[in-house]
Figure (cartoon, rainbow, N blue to C red):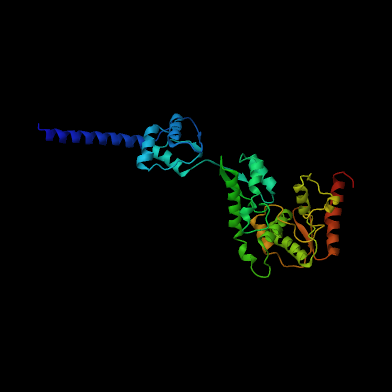
Length: 348
């Protein structure tokens, strides 16, 4: 056999061998693999190299061969970065499926609900309690007034601008990213309010959010929000005090002196947030309002009503003059509580 025939034979043998190796390589890569029991959580630390990540996944039983996975990542996928975070594995996956999960950053997220009407301190407490950072770092990020300066140049912090919603964050999400997400959500929801800011009722964003925050604390029934906002709008129009208990409560919270009880003597506290003493809107928002309260503040109900009092069931009785209001207070506050205490055997 001539050397040319030997060369052709050698090339054929090498080609067959390479095809066999390639077929084996491809089969191994695409074979679903799992060598762990039940659910497995793996945390990929920020800054970890791809090699270290893949070796960890092989050790934990997620990948069959870290070296093959690394070769596929580099030579077939172009060596993209792998995202940090917490990953859940609960089924057999092929190597490309595992790599796709890491490349896309399909990290495990946890829900956290921030309800309407919370202050910045209360929001920071909720987030810290769910493991999303420590209170002090969260509050420091919430003091970044520069993040809202385009909408509210007078803001001294982000009070009122962190939108209440249910969020899903992964472990390790930074407080800065959490605050940015909540602020971005506020901007998205406030876009529903902006068309209402044109015309004779136009107020600044700060005025709308401030009024909405008071409405949020006062209104418990959805269809009363615009009506309560209308009462406050009427008071503002004629220069009457707002006389809003939630603003006084907020003043005590800012001082760190709120014990959960509002007394008659508390209504005399010297604070710009005390709307019993200082007319007009308080200096800024007192909590984070939802979009329903924002819409109500931007488009209050038109009426002559100047007063409202609670029926003690979440609804209110409204009045246009002080005489009717005093009658309502006597019925729904004084008489109501006297009768209730009598039924409960508590006396006057």
